Image (cartoon, rainbow, N blue to C red; front, side):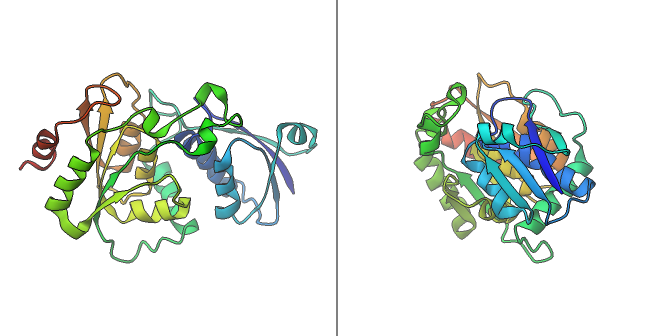
Length: 263
């Protein structure tokens, strides 16, 4: 069978990681399992950024990614609209604790996570870096150009990293996710007991954490999005927001350590 799939996400662009995972990958995996799509079936997609390559690598189906003109010219009796779950401000209809559990376990399986083995229970700090070259190119949707540390940063990240190293020693990891394979990000977050990250797409990866983990979101005061709050709620994570004065403001590291770890 051949299927022509139309991605209908709710916000932003699936060129960006949160919208790709929740607006494209999640509904796609859900549809594949609900409709028992066979591995030799052909799935046609319109190209939308380099993240689409994840589909080719992770899924066992025949994935064909076409440019806009090629996609328009493909005829199929099986046209499918996939509605995304990437709302930023309110819980997505149809998304709940059970649905996230099923999705998480399917992705663990796809990425080779052995969830019957002991975890390392690491403490992870995500470091923001300049955006992938794609997000600065003409190929990127110009409405959503840029990202990474250009949008938000923690200028005294190194100070926070030092304090966390002193407290947790070998259990602590400072990570840069931008060039890490998707499946390795899944394994990394599966192994984490706590994740600390500035508000941004990297927090989408808390989906892959074991329930009842701890998520610390360093969030600029101007941001009203609640998407990671809802994900943490449905995943049964403890979610703590540590306020940041503005997008590139240094944080009070001593205050952070005292508030989060009750030193």
